[in-house]
Image (cartoon, rainbow, N blue to C red; front, side, top):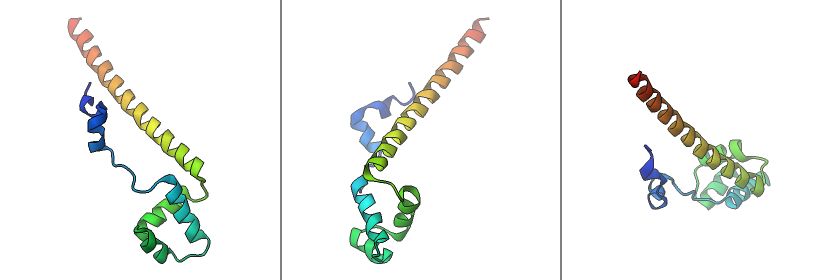
Length: 103
């Protein structure tokens, strides 16, 4: 397996960055600005850049905390499935080469 070192849970923290803000915090920040607070002041208050705020707004506007957490779970599952598919494709090609060489 090519990604054996990544599969170790202790080493995974080296590769996957933990989010600084929880789903609840992100939704709260977006709601705060929607309710009339100035974007610049809201960003300074929470220690984020305006670019981050607008990125979150395009991705998560109108979502609730449960929708956002479900989205993150599905994204993680999708990443795992893509990794598994890539590993299987690599094994498939390797086995095809072995069979082809024997013939």
